[in-house]
Image (cartoon, rainbow, N blue to C red; front, side):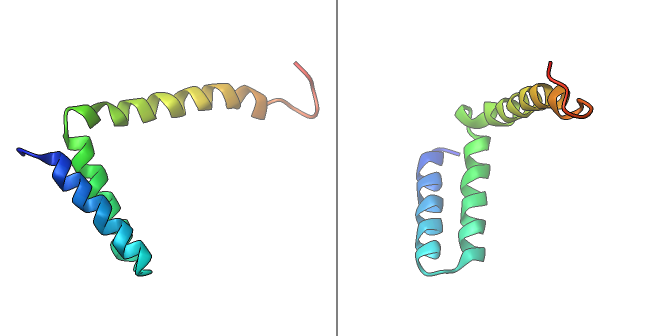
Length: 74
């Protein structure tokens, strides 16, 4: 893929135009295409790992608080 930046830009532009025309399904499709092309680039290959780390940290921080019985304070 010689120029993924152009493809990402065109997909984002297409999503914007579809959103302005109130075509939600097409805007979502263009957004997903832009995201998938971004993840396929070397720059975007770390996005899934970063999201997994973020949600793992969030889960680790919130689980002890949510599992406390009654109104106990730590």
